[in-house]
Length: 505
Image (tube, rainbow, N blue to C red; front, side):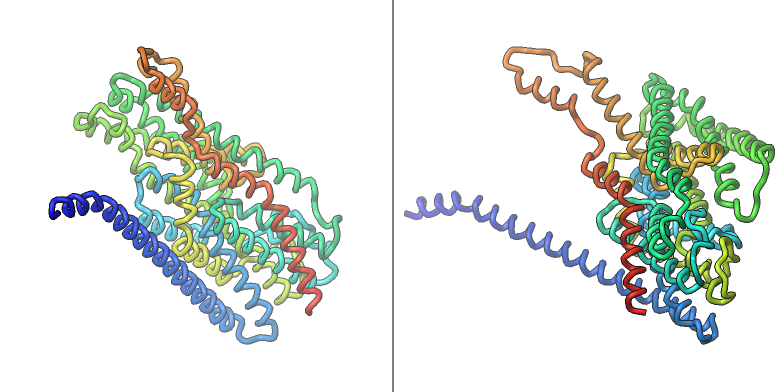
Protein backbone atom coordinates (compact mmCIF):
# COMPACT_ATOMS: atom_id res chain seq x y z
CA UNK A 1 0.00 0.00 0.00
CA UNK A 2 2.84 2.33 0.87
CA UNK A 3 4.47 1.62 -2.49
CA UNK A 4 1.31 2.58 -4.38
CA UNK A 5 0.90 5.73 -2.34
CA UNK A 6 4.54 6.66 -2.97
CA UNK A 7 4.03 6.15 -6.72
CA UNK A 8 0.90 8.27 -6.63
CA UNK A 9 2.81 10.96 -4.81
CA UNK A 10 5.64 10.87 -7.34
CA UNK A 11 3.22 10.98 -10.26
CA UNK A 12 1.46 14.03 -8.87
CA UNK A 13 4.65 15.96 -8.04
CA UNK A 14 5.20 17.29 -11.61
CA UNK A 15 1.66 18.69 -11.56
CA UNK A 16 2.29 20.36 -8.21
CA UNK A 17 5.60 21.75 -9.48
CA UNK A 18 3.95 23.15 -12.59
CA UNK A 19 1.26 24.81 -10.48
CA UNK A 20 3.88 26.33 -8.18
CA UNK A 21 5.86 27.63 -11.18
CA UNK A 22 2.74 29.26 -12.61
CA UNK A 23 1.94 30.87 -9.27
CA UNK A 24 5.49 32.20 -8.98
CA UNK A 25 5.32 33.65 -12.50
CA UNK A 26 2.03 35.37 -11.65
CA UNK A 27 3.59 36.84 -8.51
CA UNK A 28 6.62 38.08 -10.45
CA UNK A 29 4.39 39.62 -13.14
CA UNK A 30 2.26 41.29 -10.46
CA UNK A 31 5.36 42.71 -8.78
CA UNK A 32 6.66 44.06 -12.10
CA UNK A 33 3.29 45.65 -12.89
CA UNK A 34 3.15 47.23 -9.42
CA UNK A 35 6.71 48.53 -9.85
CA UNK A 36 5.85 50.10 -13.24
CA UNK A 37 2.74 51.77 -11.82
CA UNK A 38 4.67 53.08 -8.80
CA UNK A 39 7.44 54.43 -11.02
CA UNK A 40 4.90 56.06 -13.35
CA UNK A 41 3.12 57.71 -10.43
CA UNK A 42 6.44 58.88 -8.99
CA UNK A 43 7.44 60.41 -12.34
CA UNK A 44 4.07 62.15 -12.58
CA UNK A 45 4.63 63.59 -9.12
CA UNK A 46 8.07 64.95 -10.08
CA UNK A 47 6.66 66.49 -13.28
CA UNK A 48 3.93 68.25 -11.29
CA UNK A 49 6.59 69.56 -8.88
CA UNK A 50 8.50 70.95 -11.87
CA UNK A 51 5.38 72.72 -13.16
CA UNK A 52 4.77 74.13 -9.68
CA UNK A 53 8.36 75.41 -9.59
CA UNK A 54 7.81 77.06 -13.00
CA UNK A 55 4.63 78.74 -11.73
CA UNK A 56 6.43 80.18 -8.69
CA UNK A 57 9.44 81.21 -10.81
CA UNK A 58 7.33 83.05 -13.41
CA UNK A 59 5.25 84.78 -10.73
CA UNK A 60 8.36 86.35 -9.24
CA UNK A 61 9.99 87.06 -12.61
CA UNK A 62 6.98 89.05 -13.80
CA UNK A 63 6.82 90.95 -10.51
CA UNK A 64 3.14 90.32 -9.88
CA UNK A 65 2.00 92.58 -12.74
CA UNK A 66 -1.50 92.66 -14.19
CA UNK A 67 -0.52 90.33 -17.00
CA UNK A 68 1.07 87.74 -14.70
CA UNK A 69 -1.79 85.26 -15.01
CA UNK A 70 -1.64 85.09 -18.83
CA UNK A 71 2.14 84.80 -18.92
CA UNK A 72 2.08 82.21 -16.15
CA UNK A 73 -0.43 80.03 -17.99
CA UNK A 74 1.62 80.31 -21.17
CA UNK A 75 4.82 79.45 -19.25
CA UNK A 76 3.20 76.36 -17.73
CA UNK A 77 2.09 75.18 -21.17
CA UNK A 78 5.57 75.89 -22.56
CA UNK A 79 7.14 73.89 -19.71
CA UNK A 80 4.71 71.04 -20.39
CA UNK A 81 5.66 71.12 -24.08
CA UNK A 82 9.36 71.13 -23.20
CA UNK A 83 8.94 68.03 -21.03
CA UNK A 84 7.22 66.24 -23.89
CA UNK A 85 10.02 67.18 -26.28
CA UNK A 86 12.48 65.66 -23.82
CA UNK A 87 10.36 62.52 -23.44
CA UNK A 88 9.94 61.92 -27.18
CA UNK A 89 12.27 63.85 -29.49
CA UNK A 90 15.54 63.60 -27.57
CA UNK A 91 15.38 59.79 -27.58
CA UNK A 92 16.37 59.72 -31.25
CA UNK A 93 19.79 61.16 -30.43
CA UNK A 94 20.79 58.56 -27.83
CA UNK A 95 18.56 55.57 -28.69
CA UNK A 96 21.00 53.90 -31.13
CA UNK A 97 23.92 54.29 -28.67
CA UNK A 98 21.82 52.63 -25.95
CA UNK A 99 20.57 49.87 -28.23
CA UNK A 100 24.12 49.02 -29.28
CA UNK A 101 25.26 48.92 -25.61
CA UNK A 102 27.80 51.69 -26.24
CA UNK A 103 25.98 53.59 -23.49
CA UNK A 104 23.88 52.43 -20.59
CA UNK A 105 20.40 53.90 -20.29
CA UNK A 106 21.39 55.92 -17.22
CA UNK A 107 24.57 57.17 -18.90
CA UNK A 108 22.63 58.18 -22.00
CA UNK A 109 20.04 60.05 -19.93
CA UNK A 110 22.74 61.99 -18.08
CA UNK A 111 24.72 62.86 -21.23
CA UNK A 112 21.62 63.87 -23.18
CA UNK A 113 20.21 65.97 -20.32
CA UNK A 114 23.48 67.88 -19.88
CA UNK A 115 24.10 68.52 -23.56
CA UNK A 116 20.46 69.32 -24.40
CA UNK A 117 20.42 71.99 -21.67
CA UNK A 118 23.85 73.27 -22.73
CA UNK A 119 22.78 73.54 -26.36
CA UNK A 120 19.61 75.42 -25.46
CA UNK A 121 21.32 77.85 -23.07
CA UNK A 122 24.57 78.42 -24.99
CA UNK A 123 23.32 78.44 -28.58
CA UNK A 124 19.56 78.75 -28.25
CA UNK A 125 19.78 82.22 -29.72
CA UNK A 126 18.32 85.60 -28.92
CA UNK A 127 16.00 85.99 -31.88
CA UNK A 128 13.57 83.32 -33.04
CA UNK A 129 10.69 83.01 -35.44
CA UNK A 130 7.58 82.94 -33.31
CA UNK A 131 5.06 81.90 -35.95
CA UNK A 132 6.81 78.57 -36.52
CA UNK A 133 8.75 79.07 -39.74
CA UNK A 134 6.42 81.78 -41.16
CA UNK A 135 3.47 79.45 -41.59
CA UNK A 136 0.97 82.02 -40.34
CA UNK A 137 1.35 85.74 -40.98
CA UNK A 138 1.20 87.87 -37.82
CA UNK A 139 -0.69 90.53 -39.79
CA UNK A 140 -3.64 88.14 -40.11
CA UNK A 141 -4.63 88.56 -36.45
CA UNK A 142 -7.08 91.35 -35.67
CA UNK A 143 -5.61 92.18 -32.25
CA UNK A 144 -3.06 90.88 -29.79
CA UNK A 145 -5.57 89.01 -27.60
CA UNK A 146 -6.63 86.79 -30.51
CA UNK A 147 -2.97 86.15 -31.30
CA UNK A 148 -2.16 85.29 -27.66
CA UNK A 149 -4.95 82.73 -27.36
CA UNK A 150 -4.16 81.27 -30.79
CA UNK A 151 -0.49 80.73 -29.83
CA UNK A 152 -1.50 79.28 -26.48
CA UNK A 153 -3.88 76.86 -28.23
CA UNK A 154 -1.15 75.86 -30.69
CA UNK A 155 1.37 75.21 -27.93
CA UNK A 156 -1.05 73.19 -25.80
CA UNK A 157 -2.28 71.08 -28.73
CA UNK A 158 1.30 70.23 -29.78
CA UNK A 159 2.17 69.25 -26.21
CA UNK A 160 -0.92 67.05 -25.89
CA UNK A 161 -0.22 65.30 -29.19
CA UNK A 162 3.45 64.61 -28.39
CA UNK A 163 2.38 63.33 -24.97
CA UNK A 164 -0.10 60.94 -26.60
CA UNK A 165 2.51 59.78 -29.13
CA UNK A 166 4.97 59.08 -26.31
CA UNK A 167 2.33 57.06 -24.47
CA UNK A 168 1.70 55.02 -27.64
CA UNK A 169 5.43 54.51 -28.17
CA UNK A 170 5.70 56.48 -31.43
CA UNK A 171 8.65 58.88 -31.97
CA UNK A 172 7.17 61.93 -33.73
CA UNK A 173 8.46 65.29 -34.89
CA UNK A 174 7.82 68.03 -32.34
CA UNK A 175 8.43 70.59 -35.09
CA UNK A 176 5.58 69.11 -37.12
CA UNK A 177 3.43 69.01 -33.99
CA UNK A 178 3.84 72.73 -33.34
CA UNK A 179 3.38 73.42 -37.06
CA UNK A 180 0.03 71.60 -36.97
CA UNK A 181 -0.97 73.47 -33.83
CA UNK A 182 -0.15 76.85 -35.40
CA UNK A 183 -2.14 75.95 -38.54
CA UNK A 184 -5.20 74.81 -36.58
CA UNK A 185 -5.21 77.80 -34.26
CA UNK A 186 -4.33 80.24 -37.06
CA UNK A 187 -7.13 79.05 -39.34
CA UNK A 188 -9.61 79.11 -36.45
CA UNK A 189 -8.60 82.65 -35.47
CA UNK A 190 -7.91 84.30 -38.84
CA UNK A 191 -9.20 82.00 -41.61
CA UNK A 192 -7.56 79.92 -44.34
CA UNK A 193 -5.91 82.93 -45.94
CA UNK A 194 -3.68 83.37 -42.89
CA UNK A 195 -1.70 80.20 -43.71
CA UNK A 196 1.20 80.18 -46.16
CA UNK A 197 0.28 76.96 -47.98
CA UNK A 198 3.48 76.94 -50.04
CA UNK A 199 5.51 76.63 -46.85
CA UNK A 200 3.09 73.93 -45.73
CA UNK A 201 3.71 71.96 -48.93
CA UNK A 202 7.46 72.06 -48.27
CA UNK A 203 6.92 70.76 -44.75
CA UNK A 204 4.65 67.99 -46.05
CA UNK A 205 7.38 67.01 -48.52
CA UNK A 206 9.75 66.53 -45.59
CA UNK A 207 7.56 63.65 -44.34
CA UNK A 208 8.95 61.64 -47.25
CA UNK A 209 12.34 63.31 -47.74
CA UNK A 210 13.55 63.00 -44.13
CA UNK A 211 13.14 59.26 -43.46
CA UNK A 212 13.98 58.15 -47.00
CA UNK A 213 17.17 60.23 -47.20
CA UNK A 214 18.21 59.20 -43.69
CA UNK A 215 17.54 55.54 -44.43
CA UNK A 216 19.42 55.54 -47.74
CA UNK A 217 22.53 57.23 -46.32
CA UNK A 218 22.63 54.97 -43.24
CA UNK A 219 22.15 51.85 -45.36
CA UNK A 220 24.86 52.98 -47.79
CA UNK A 221 27.41 53.40 -45.00
CA UNK A 222 26.44 50.07 -43.44
CA UNK A 223 26.82 48.31 -46.80
CA UNK A 224 30.27 49.86 -47.24
CA UNK A 225 31.39 48.78 -43.75
CA UNK A 226 30.13 45.25 -44.32
CA UNK A 227 31.83 44.73 -47.68
CA UNK A 228 34.99 46.72 -46.91
CA UNK A 229 35.61 45.44 -43.38
CA UNK A 230 33.25 42.86 -41.87
CA UNK A 231 33.15 40.43 -44.81
CA UNK A 232 36.95 40.49 -45.23
CA UNK A 233 39.13 37.60 -44.18
CA UNK A 234 41.47 39.91 -42.26
CA UNK A 235 39.02 42.24 -40.51
CA UNK A 236 41.62 43.99 -38.35
CA UNK A 237 43.77 45.07 -41.31
CA UNK A 238 40.66 46.33 -43.10
CA UNK A 239 39.57 48.16 -39.93
CA UNK A 240 42.98 49.86 -39.64
CA UNK A 241 42.51 51.16 -43.17
CA UNK A 242 38.87 52.26 -43.11
CA UNK A 243 37.75 52.97 -39.53
CA UNK A 244 39.90 56.14 -39.23
CA UNK A 245 38.37 57.36 -42.50
CA UNK A 246 34.82 56.67 -41.33
CA UNK A 247 35.32 58.30 -37.93
CA UNK A 248 37.01 61.28 -39.60
CA UNK A 249 34.01 61.65 -41.94
CA UNK A 250 31.76 61.62 -38.89
CA UNK A 251 33.88 64.25 -37.11
CA UNK A 252 33.90 66.44 -40.21
CA UNK A 253 30.14 66.09 -40.69
CA UNK A 254 29.41 66.84 -37.05
CA UNK A 255 31.69 69.88 -37.05
CA UNK A 256 29.82 71.37 -40.00
CA UNK A 257 26.48 70.21 -38.59
CA UNK A 258 27.08 71.91 -35.23
CA UNK A 259 28.10 75.16 -36.87
CA UNK A 260 25.19 75.15 -39.32
CA UNK A 261 22.47 74.02 -36.91
CA UNK A 262 23.74 74.04 -33.35
CA UNK A 263 25.45 77.45 -33.45
CA UNK A 264 23.48 79.09 -36.24
CA UNK A 265 21.82 81.58 -33.89
CA UNK A 266 25.14 82.99 -32.65
CA UNK A 267 27.48 82.43 -35.63
CA UNK A 268 26.80 82.09 -39.38
CA UNK A 269 30.03 81.36 -41.29
CA UNK A 270 30.17 81.35 -45.09
CA UNK A 271 30.69 78.31 -47.31
CA UNK A 272 34.48 78.74 -47.37
CA UNK A 273 34.70 78.77 -43.58
CA UNK A 274 32.45 75.69 -43.36
CA UNK A 275 34.75 73.90 -45.82
CA UNK A 276 37.82 74.81 -43.78
CA UNK A 277 36.12 73.57 -40.59
CA UNK A 278 35.13 70.28 -42.22
CA UNK A 279 38.56 69.60 -43.76
CA UNK A 280 40.33 70.56 -40.53
CA UNK A 281 38.14 68.25 -38.43
CA UNK A 282 38.65 65.39 -40.90
CA UNK A 283 42.45 65.74 -40.95
CA UNK A 284 42.86 66.04 -37.17
CA UNK A 285 40.49 63.18 -36.40
CA UNK A 286 42.04 60.87 -38.98
CA UNK A 287 45.51 61.38 -37.51
CA UNK A 288 44.33 60.73 -33.95
CA UNK A 289 42.17 57.68 -34.73
CA UNK A 290 44.69 56.06 -37.07
CA UNK A 291 47.39 56.31 -34.41
CA UNK A 292 45.09 54.91 -31.71
CA UNK A 293 43.94 51.94 -33.81
CA UNK A 294 47.50 51.12 -34.91
CA UNK A 295 48.48 51.00 -31.24
CA UNK A 296 45.73 48.56 -30.19
CA UNK A 297 45.41 46.52 -33.41
CA UNK A 298 47.81 43.85 -32.18
CA UNK A 299 45.60 43.12 -29.16
CA UNK A 300 42.37 42.75 -31.15
CA UNK A 301 40.89 39.43 -32.23
CA UNK A 302 39.96 38.99 -35.87
CA UNK A 303 36.23 39.15 -35.12
CA UNK A 304 33.28 41.38 -35.91
CA UNK A 305 32.88 42.24 -32.24
CA UNK A 306 36.41 43.67 -32.10
CA UNK A 307 35.68 45.93 -35.06
CA UNK A 308 32.45 47.11 -33.44
CA UNK A 309 34.30 48.04 -30.25
CA UNK A 310 36.32 50.59 -32.24
CA UNK A 311 33.14 52.65 -32.74
CA UNK A 312 32.25 52.94 -29.03
CA UNK A 313 33.86 56.31 -28.31
CA UNK A 314 32.67 57.89 -31.60
CA UNK A 315 29.13 56.76 -30.74
CA UNK A 316 29.24 58.38 -27.30
CA UNK A 317 30.57 61.60 -28.82
CA UNK A 318 27.85 61.47 -31.48
CA UNK A 319 25.12 61.12 -28.85
CA UNK A 320 26.46 64.14 -26.97
CA UNK A 321 26.87 66.31 -30.09
CA UNK A 322 23.45 65.39 -31.47
CA UNK A 323 21.90 66.30 -28.13
CA UNK A 324 23.70 69.66 -28.09
CA UNK A 325 22.54 70.49 -31.62
CA UNK A 326 19.01 69.35 -30.84
CA UNK A 327 18.83 71.47 -27.68
CA UNK A 328 20.00 74.57 -29.53
CA UNK A 329 17.73 74.03 -32.50
CA UNK A 330 14.50 72.59 -31.08
CA UNK A 331 14.13 74.50 -27.83
CA UNK A 332 12.24 77.07 -29.92
CA UNK A 333 9.48 74.50 -30.44
CA UNK A 334 8.79 74.67 -26.72
CA UNK A 335 9.34 78.34 -26.00
CA UNK A 336 8.88 80.07 -29.39
CA UNK A 337 5.13 80.57 -28.97
CA UNK A 338 5.74 81.40 -25.29
CA UNK A 339 8.20 84.13 -26.28
CA UNK A 340 5.64 85.47 -28.77
CA UNK A 341 2.99 85.61 -26.05
CA UNK A 342 5.33 87.38 -23.61
CA UNK A 343 6.24 89.90 -26.32
CA UNK A 344 2.60 90.55 -27.24
CA UNK A 345 1.55 90.94 -23.60
CA UNK A 346 4.41 93.20 -22.48
CA UNK A 347 4.85 95.33 -25.62
CA UNK A 348 1.30 95.23 -26.92
CA UNK A 349 2.26 94.20 -30.45
CA UNK A 350 2.43 91.10 -32.61
CA UNK A 351 5.77 90.56 -34.34
CA UNK A 352 7.19 87.88 -36.62
CA UNK A 353 10.47 87.83 -34.69
CA UNK A 354 11.06 88.68 -31.05
CA UNK A 355 13.88 88.68 -28.55
CA UNK A 356 13.98 85.50 -26.49
CA UNK A 357 14.28 86.33 -22.76
CA UNK A 358 16.79 84.24 -20.83
CA UNK A 359 14.19 83.06 -18.33
CA UNK A 360 11.99 81.74 -21.16
CA UNK A 361 14.99 79.91 -22.62
CA UNK A 362 15.78 78.46 -19.20
CA UNK A 363 12.27 77.02 -18.85
CA UNK A 364 12.67 75.27 -22.20
CA UNK A 365 16.14 73.94 -21.42
CA UNK A 366 15.27 72.60 -17.96
CA UNK A 367 11.91 71.26 -19.16
CA UNK A 368 13.53 69.21 -21.94
CA UNK A 369 15.99 67.69 -19.46
CA UNK A 370 13.25 66.92 -16.91
CA UNK A 371 11.07 65.24 -19.54
CA UNK A 372 14.01 63.20 -20.80
CA UNK A 373 14.99 61.96 -17.34
CA UNK A 374 11.43 61.12 -16.25
CA UNK A 375 9.79 59.81 -19.41
CA UNK A 376 12.55 59.41 -22.03
CA UNK A 377 13.49 55.72 -21.47
CA UNK A 378 10.38 54.41 -23.25
CA UNK A 379 11.13 55.98 -26.65
CA UNK A 380 14.87 55.42 -26.20
CA UNK A 381 14.27 51.67 -25.91
CA UNK A 382 11.89 51.62 -28.88
CA UNK A 383 14.31 53.47 -31.18
CA UNK A 384 17.42 51.68 -29.91
CA UNK A 385 16.17 48.14 -29.31
CA UNK A 386 12.66 47.32 -30.53
CA UNK A 387 12.57 48.44 -34.17
CA UNK A 388 15.56 46.31 -35.11
CA UNK A 389 18.64 44.97 -33.38
CA UNK A 390 21.47 47.51 -33.36
CA UNK A 391 25.12 46.76 -32.78
CA UNK A 392 27.75 49.49 -32.64
CA UNK A 393 28.46 49.44 -36.35
CA UNK A 394 24.78 49.92 -37.23
CA UNK A 395 24.34 52.58 -34.54
CA UNK A 396 27.38 54.42 -35.92
CA UNK A 397 25.76 54.46 -39.38
CA UNK A 398 22.54 55.89 -37.89
CA UNK A 399 24.39 58.70 -36.09
CA UNK A 400 26.51 59.49 -39.16
CA UNK A 401 23.42 59.57 -41.35
CA UNK A 402 21.68 62.03 -39.02
CA UNK A 403 24.40 64.67 -39.38
CA UNK A 404 25.03 64.19 -43.10
CA UNK A 405 21.32 64.24 -43.99
CA UNK A 406 20.76 67.52 -42.16
CA UNK A 407 23.76 69.08 -43.94
CA UNK A 408 22.53 67.95 -47.38
CA UNK A 409 18.97 69.10 -46.70
CA UNK A 410 20.09 72.47 -45.32
CA UNK A 411 22.33 73.04 -48.35
CA UNK A 412 19.45 72.26 -50.72
CA UNK A 413 16.97 74.28 -48.67
CA UNK A 414 14.81 71.26 -47.87
CA UNK A 415 12.86 71.23 -44.59
CA UNK A 416 13.61 67.97 -42.75
CA UNK A 417 12.84 66.53 -39.34
CA UNK A 418 15.68 65.23 -37.16
CA UNK A 419 13.25 62.70 -35.67
CA UNK A 420 12.27 61.35 -39.08
CA UNK A 421 15.92 61.20 -40.16
CA UNK A 422 17.07 59.21 -37.13
CA UNK A 423 14.16 56.77 -37.19
CA UNK A 424 14.41 56.43 -40.98
CA UNK A 425 18.10 55.60 -40.56
CA UNK A 426 17.26 52.88 -38.04
CA UNK A 427 14.80 51.36 -40.49
CA UNK A 428 17.35 51.73 -43.29
CA UNK A 429 20.03 49.68 -41.55
CA UNK A 430 17.42 47.16 -40.41
CA UNK A 431 16.02 46.55 -43.88
CA UNK A 432 19.51 46.31 -45.41
CA UNK A 433 20.49 43.76 -42.78
CA UNK A 434 17.32 41.80 -43.48
CA UNK A 435 17.95 41.86 -47.24
CA UNK A 436 21.60 40.78 -46.98
CA UNK A 437 20.81 38.02 -44.49
CA UNK A 438 18.03 36.49 -46.58
CA UNK A 439 20.01 36.93 -49.80
CA UNK A 440 22.97 35.08 -48.30
CA UNK A 441 20.71 32.20 -47.27
CA UNK A 442 19.41 31.92 -50.83
CA UNK A 443 22.68 32.33 -52.75
CA UNK A 444 25.36 30.81 -50.51
CA UNK A 445 25.17 27.02 -50.81
CA UNK A 446 26.94 26.56 -47.49
CA UNK A 447 24.03 28.25 -45.74
CA UNK A 448 21.41 25.98 -47.29
CA UNK A 449 20.73 22.47 -45.98
CA UNK A 450 21.67 19.69 -48.37
CA UNK A 451 18.52 17.73 -49.23
CA UNK A 452 18.55 14.28 -47.72
CA UNK A 453 15.92 11.58 -47.35
CA UNK A 454 13.26 12.58 -44.84
CA UNK A 455 14.64 16.09 -44.50
CA UNK A 456 11.32 17.94 -44.98
CA UNK A 457 11.57 19.59 -41.58
CA UNK A 458 15.04 20.96 -42.34
CA UNK A 459 13.89 22.35 -45.68
CA UNK A 460 10.88 24.03 -44.04
CA UNK A 461 13.14 25.65 -41.48
CA UNK A 462 15.40 26.96 -44.23
CA UNK A 463 12.42 28.37 -46.15
CA UNK A 464 11.26 30.08 -42.97
CA UNK A 465 14.72 31.55 -42.43
CA UNK A 466 14.64 33.00 -45.93
CA UNK A 467 11.50 34.93 -44.98
CA UNK A 468 12.90 36.07 -41.65
CA UNK A 469 11.94 39.61 -40.71
CA UNK A 470 14.65 41.56 -38.92
CA UNK A 471 12.59 44.76 -38.73
CA UNK A 472 9.46 44.70 -36.59
CA UNK A 473 6.59 45.64 -38.90
CA UNK A 474 4.32 46.53 -36.00
CA UNK A 475 6.55 49.42 -35.00
CA UNK A 476 6.93 50.45 -38.64
CA UNK A 477 3.17 50.78 -39.12
CA UNK A 478 2.64 52.58 -35.79
CA UNK A 479 5.38 55.12 -36.48
CA UNK A 480 4.35 55.81 -40.09
CA UNK A 481 0.73 56.28 -39.03
CA UNK A 482 1.78 58.68 -36.27
CA UNK A 483 3.92 60.69 -38.70
CA UNK A 484 1.11 61.01 -41.24
CA UNK A 485 -1.46 62.27 -38.76
CA UNK A 486 0.80 64.50 -36.62
CA UNK A 487 0.05 67.78 -38.40
CA UNK A 488 -3.71 67.23 -38.92
CA UNK A 489 -4.16 65.78 -35.42
CA UNK A 490 -2.42 68.67 -33.65
CA UNK A 491 -4.26 71.14 -35.93
CA UNK A 492 -7.67 69.68 -35.00
CA UNK A 493 -6.81 69.71 -31.29
CA UNK A 494 -5.58 73.32 -31.54
CA UNK A 495 -8.79 74.42 -33.27
CA UNK A 496 -10.87 72.69 -30.62
CA UNK A 497 -8.91 74.35 -27.82
CA UNK A 498 -9.16 77.77 -29.45
CA UNK A 499 -12.93 77.52 -29.93
CA UNK A 500 -13.31 76.32 -26.33
CA UNK A 501 -11.29 79.26 -25.00
CA UNK A 502 -13.36 81.69 -27.10
CA UNK A 503 -16.56 80.18 -25.77
CA UNK A 504 -15.65 80.55 -22.09
CA UNK A 505 -13.73 83.84 -21.99
